Every structure is written in structure tokens, then in C-alpha cells.
Length: 114
Image (cartoon, rainbow, N blue to C red; front, side, top):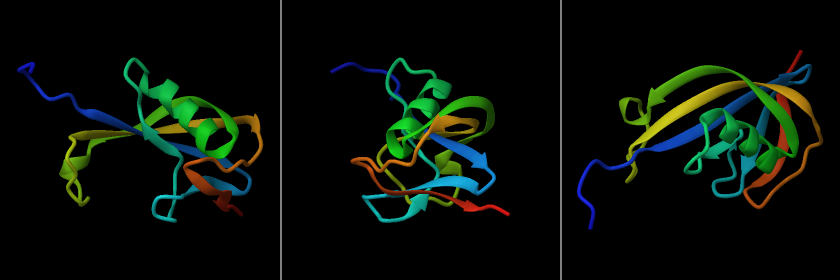
């Protein structure tokens, strides 16, 4: 077994806005609404993972425009898990597509628009 530092995981979330508010997806695992996102794959840049996760979970195409926040999950009030996680939040621009549920999501909608 290799000795050395444990590799952290990167949790990517994307904030996508339009005239109807912010895009949220309903996760099948807990039936709660959240920003689209998930784990970055090995070799992915965080911005690439942000774009991929939005498409996979919502059906919408986006462009990652700006890294809005990055933080250490363990430094906030979250339940403990077995991994050390950095969370990255991107502001994304809607580029097209249509709402589509996935194997991970059972709802897709925009909330909070004026």
C-alpha cells in the first residue's frame, strides 16, 4: 500500500441564473433541492466539472464564468464524512438546452425569480 498524503476530493456546485431565478435540481438520493454539481473526476479542471455536472443533472448547457467561492468543507457546519473535501462554487451562464431529469435528479427548475 502506498504511503503519503490522502488525496482530497473536490465538490463542484454551479449557480445558473435566468429571469426565473436560480437553477436547482432535486436529488434522488435525499429528495432535496440543491445547486447542480458533484465530484470532479480525476484530471478534470473544476470549471470543466461544473459545466459537465450541470448538463448531466439538469439538461442545460452552461459556460463557467467565474469561481465565486472555494472553501474547506470541514471548517463549516456539515455532518462529518470519510473524505476531506474542498467545495468550489461557480457562476455559470446559461447557453441553452432544456430541463431534463437524470439518474441522479428527479426535478429541474428555476426558483426565486422576479
